[in-house]
Length: 163
Ligand code: ADP
Ligand code: MG
Image 1: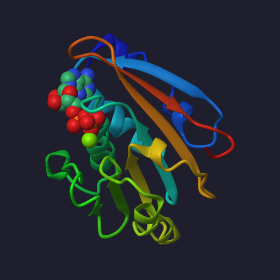
Image 2: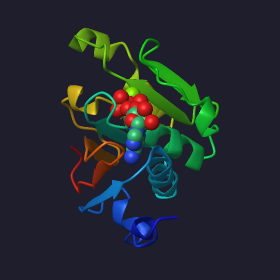
Image 3: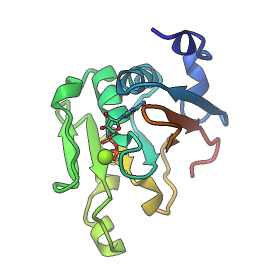
Image 4: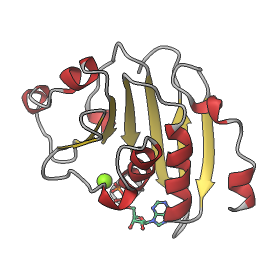
């Protein structure tokens, strides 16, 4: 593990609802997976994780780590739901949504996000900024940005009020 990963603040700093913002830079996809696995330990259902950042920023990579950390699937079995829009893992305990191709509010409403949350799930949403709404359950907003070829800045915002 790189020194940067070893020096992370206590993982509860990025639990939903703490009001904190936390940033790190990862230097490989594997480090981003590891951030996801650690983050997963702080998540209890129901909650929603909004993932933001351009194509290739690492939203799916981070999601793989989170789903694996939750014990819902192995990271290599987590694939981008770009066409299906929603993938389900762990018998309905985790949903992975990708809004990249969603263009209308009507389409968003047919996704059933609230049904997933009502079913006590952890819901991960790529292109979460497209939702433009708040949730009654705890939420995290995670922004991924390019910071050099294999480097990505990961900013985890844990609002006390839901976004
Ligand atoms: P998104 O879902 O945001 O479009 P992906 O996770 O699908 O992004 O793709 C990220 C791409 O960037 C992958 O090809 C991955 O191998 C590469 N990559 C390089 N460095 C990193 C890093 N530090 N973290 C995450 N992905 C990285
Ligand atoms: Mg993706």
